[in-house]
Length: 209
Image (cartoon, rainbow, N blue to C red; front, side, top):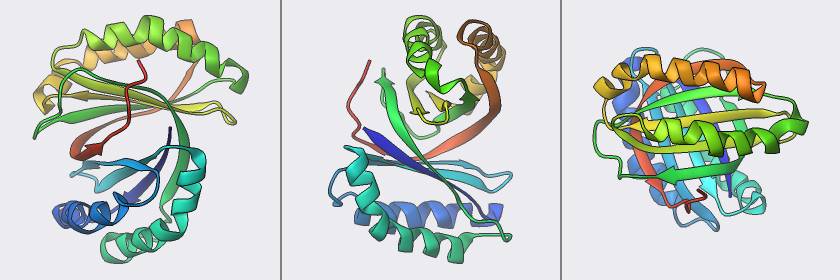
């Protein structure tokens, strides 16, 4: 399984319109594309930053979709974009996907970007599954987690979905301790950490763990 993430910026006051556009126009168009297995959208209403991630059965389907996805992405920028920056587009392998409960309205995400030596990616995945994942699952309000990797660069992005913003805030210290443990045991560099509202979650990606 593979995923394409697109990070964009909009005026915070336009976020509801952007969510509606994704839900009413983009997702209906994408769900019938060959190999598409889902779409999610996370947003920060204070900064206007949002991340749209589409999931695909394989790399070939993801790459083949770009011709049809690009015009929708350009329309998103034209309608809701701010500033002169281009969308940040990244392609990933979906290495881990695990759900324990359905995400309802009000769910929030904690997203961590990290990097390791490309030669260590498989070892990092082993340690994540054996050590970090059980710790994350013990957090109150835990719904699901995913880990996406780029084996060529050694970059990874982990997302933890919790049932509410209040639970997200309550678990910040535990999450910080988990990241510190990852740095010690997995030889990772933490590049960024951010918290987002889970605005859309139309995912049919099979469980991997």
